[in-house]
Image 1 (cartoon, rainbow over the protein chains, first blue to last red):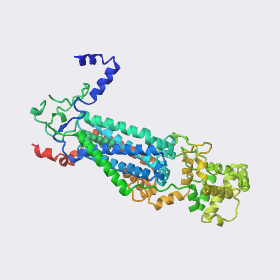
Image 2: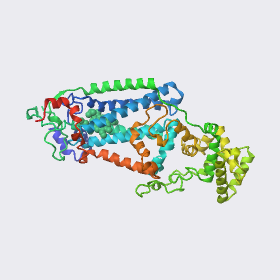
Image 3: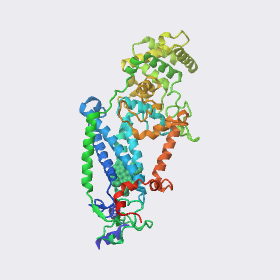
Image 4: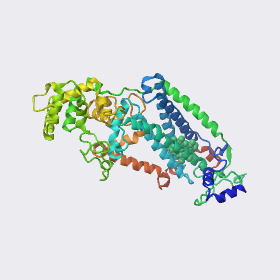
Length: 216
Length: 320
Ligand code: HEM
């Protein structure tokens, strides 16, 4: 009964409004369910979780790198190892993400109101590329010099270089460690919420499940 | 009780009458799956890092440039003074020397504006102005500053041409009317040798550096940076944007962006950068809108990879 009462005042009370919105994001019981539809039985489903896991390794190794400062990995063998971990976790992140992307493509996983899940996935792919690019510019080694010298023409040609100066490593490093990872992280959260909200997409051409099962 | 998997929002359009929530379920442990994935990825990352390490080729310093290719420094300095280098003729965002690139007639580069003004002459003159105790150099600077723009240009261009004829070797340049230009160029070489050039360019007037724009532009105006890159198979026409030094994987996800630079019409276009960007934006948009594009969204139906993914399900539910 009290729940009804809250809903009635939702229009006026901002807190109730926010609570209702948050509660409606994922249907109750579906945030962390311990059961999945029978058809969720393929290795391809693991790649979303693997992307997520490697993203966590990327973030963790990146955070350790920030502790030592922006030149640490050139002067310390520990720093260099953490730098190597950061690089390889990024390679794994992209590898698993691309397999995930193609898996979802061949499963046409955007069906049944899941288009936004696909769209946020593509945004993730693109923003991850941007984040990795600023990472290469922050290496402060020969690769950074060359990528900056080569890449500037592309960015300048579309007028963006005037604001996003890839020859300025201080600007690039800050983008790389603040705004861009925050954006990717926020997109990941949104993406995963959408996945849980809609449930795993049923197989293509699946026949309607037996009515007996419905409401079981 | 049935688990409600439909979002509570009531304003949605009517949906297919059944969805994932209507199927029978099986046991599944998401948290365990994630924790195992995290452990596996961490161990795999650590193993790859331990075995393959990561590239750390030292950045080229101006001193190394001066050491390895002094004639290139001289030629670049003369070019900056003559206004013939890449940066001197660049256009936005550094100067007004060129119109910049456009896509389908839209001058995006120009619209960005000249927000990072760089005077290529200053790339040479400003570091020299800081040199003390070299009367000949001070005199050369004075002569340059006291001359008209036309005179400066004619001296510098004459020296650029003469260097060209001499195969780039300043020692073999025939005498000519070069004014103070040879002295200025030699002056820049000696500042570069001393290791003071980066500092003079990056932190001019401020204690804190950090913005390498002018250093990179100067370095990239020379041939040494590109020669070094090409020797490592990193040239623009060698898929350089996505490769990394050594045998490291680099940025393979940039393959499509890099691909366009290798083929016509882009490989021969003056507007290649802007065109490739526009094309990639368009393709990205297409990828994003796949769920809405008839034909494209039907490809997974036509090429039935999904029968592999859900083969268990299809075996138990043969099509009628
Ligand atoms: C940071 C990168 C990404 C992470 C961490 C991530 C994570 C996940 C996870 C954990 C799932 C649920 C498990 C699964 O079905 O695999 C999922 C589902 C999904 N992902 Fe991603 N994803 C990422 C990128 C992408 C990309 C690039 C696309 C496609 C363009 C994409 C499209 C989808 C779709 C359509 C689903 C729904 C699948 C279904 O209902 O069966 N994701 N994602």
